[in-house]
Image (cartoon, rainbow, N blue to C red):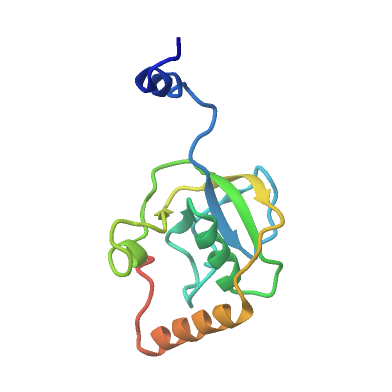
Length: 148
């Protein structure tokens, strides 16, 4: 005799080795085991030293991070693990996307690199160009990140 849907569902609720993955998009050339920390030049903006570091639980947001990062280096996406508490990124969750659908976060504690995503596909160049133009307009208007 077959099992009921309830019995089948409860069997599917087993412990798993998989946890939430977090990503950090950048142009920095880093290695597994390295720490991404506050106090260095940020990926974006004119600030000399970043007060927060950022991570996301979605590949799309990580891709944007890599594509929009300052510098001329190779675009990279690292798999990272936070070493401390993380909080919602107020630039996205409070202003643009209530509820944090981009799963974007920030922290004052380091992230440890545990891997690198290889073979990801970026956005079309026209879309990246348009995003960069929009960010430049925000800068002209005096709208800056809440990276305080």
